[in-house]
Image 1 (cartoon, rainbow, N blue to C red):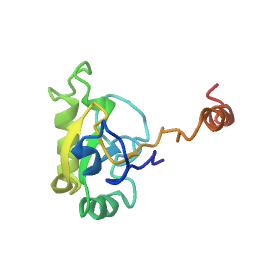
Image 2 (image 1 turned 30 degrees about the vertical axis):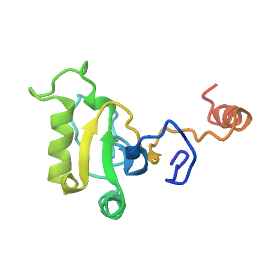
Image 3 (image 1 turned 135 degrees about the horizontal axis):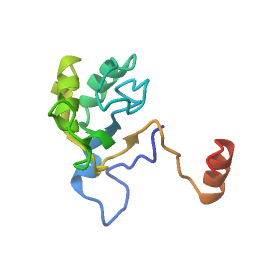
Image 4 (image 1 turned 90 degrees about the vertical axis):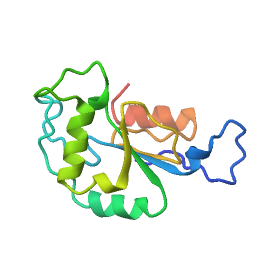
Length: 137
């Protein structure tokens, strides 16, 4: 799901320039199939179909930042490697690395976020209805 998109003509006094140049993409469930969840901490699946072509297209207009909980500093090493190192290896293996500027655990400033677990916010009535329909609450 893509959350609210901001444009350079939006009037937001706290905006920083990179909010209009960067697009953030979640790693697991959006680029990496992640069919077994955390499993053993490895990155075991191939890309989700269409993800590389989509990233190439997005990269024509935006700087791409990949974010993932795997990149958190408190995550255990896997085969002596951090989650960031594992993600970069996977990005390189499948041809994504030329299109990605950074991998982070933090949600970066961006024009929008592509995330498989997102709930789009318009207002609280609509949001609560979505949460109830998904049986989250």
